[in-house]
Image 1 (tube, rainbow, N blue to C red):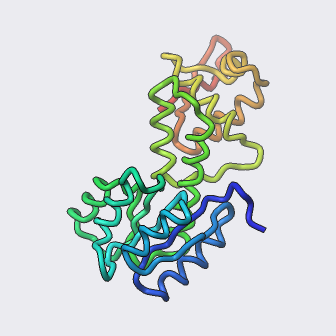
Image 2 (tube, rainbow, N blue to C red):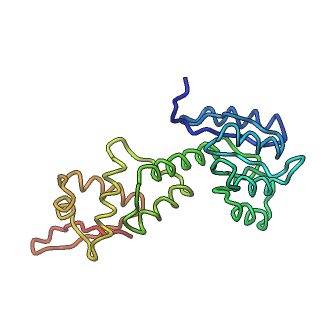
Image 3 (cartoon, rainbow, N blue to C red):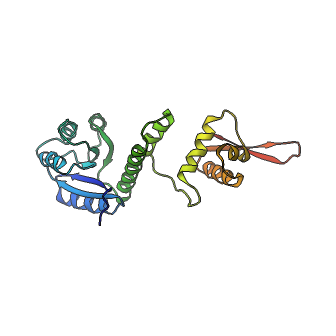
Length: 228
């Protein structure tokens, strides 16, 4: 039974074989549900009004209206708000630019592999979740993270690493001008030294933090960390 908070999707493509394949791919992604399929531009506009989907997967080659015109009309005030991801065989830079100008969040080139579409949908879901959770952004870097999450694959995160704590560590490192030790970081964010060290080493592995040894009077090095 689909959850009421599923992201609803409208698929627009003139080829029934393509729409059937996309429908199967989308419905396999947890949290997404196809609510409509349209094979022409006018049918797409009618379906967008009828189903009010959160997301529209839009082909640019349609029998009655250019896909770019459909994208433009979807922005009209009488149309319910929807995000658009273009899926097209066209690769011209002018076409990609025109799609962006008409509000496309992303542009996928046909034939689209299942894994590529799935990752794009998961990035979209993560971005939508962050936007819904944030009533107001306090810093530019928070907005930067929103845009990065839409266009950057989500990295592998071990079960022992929390996304929220990971971000707290990154924010704390961004606020200091000098490098810090695991002990100093732990004291500033309220976690144990072992936890701080675990997160710091994870971020080093991801390439987001750099580390270097600092030698004290005893000759034993202390690892210092700073954001890249």
